[in-house]
Length: 106
Image 1 (cartoon, helix red, strand yellow):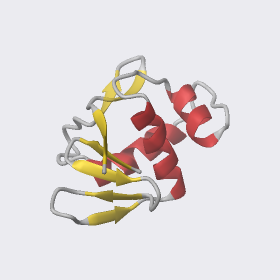
Image 2: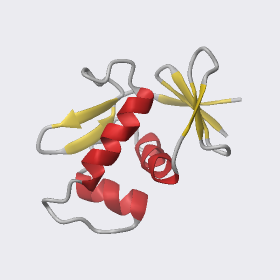
Image 3: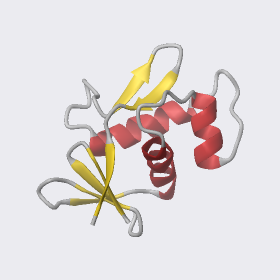
């Protein structure tokens, strides 16, 4: 299965991102799981705790920043401008949100 969002296609079976020029970027298992959670819920704000639970199956304390580090790593792979993220948006006092639509492609 392939899912398109923004300028990227996620090849779910191979766990790689493909940009508009055809360049492929491999994802770690953790990055893939986190991206999959966001892609399954486009435009839905998910708290850090929800993201950690859904992507890793573990609970997080209120001061746990593991997910922030993972989001930063993922943004470096998918955002055209890391200083102005548009694909994964930070929601103040809320968490994170995939802020683009997702479509299935052949």
